[in-house]
Length: 206
Image (cartoon, rainbow, N blue to C red; front, side, top):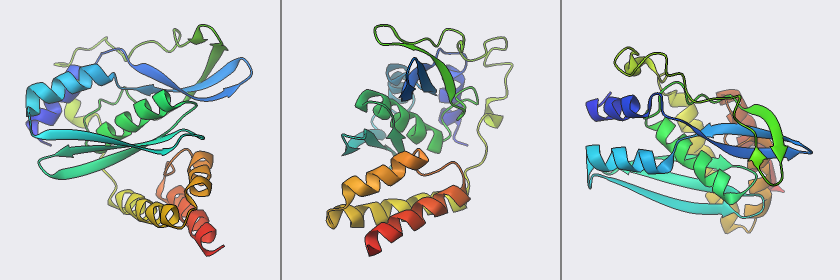
């Protein structure tokens, strides 16, 4: 892994995560940790200066789906965010794009959590706490924080992206977005990604 990527991991280790609301059910909310955008941007500017870029596209307003494209030296990886609102979807998309580049420490896991929700105060994430700070960055082997990227999963995501483009051109973008919502994005495994692709393909065929 590039040494600057490891440095970004180290800077993010132990920092307080934010949380995006993925789903509401009465007084309960399903949340997921997202990286603090300002902190990530500061680290990328410090380490990579003008060698990185970020772009966004709103795939759907309702349901909220946002795509984030994070590029380094002409090479790009994307993250897809599906959440309760556009702000949350944006945070999830950025986190997934950073994860695709292995910029995140393991404390930004992919496990969601159900917490109490108040319409005025929002989700109560106090019990979830910040990422573990018992060990500092120097004590934690940050190079082990993210598992190797699965080539099959990356290939599956590319196929889904290509098919989504085709469906949008056919005027089926809304229906395709609903498929992604049901699966929480691309899916959490190659098998689930294949199911997403199969549903999208069936939609295309009518």
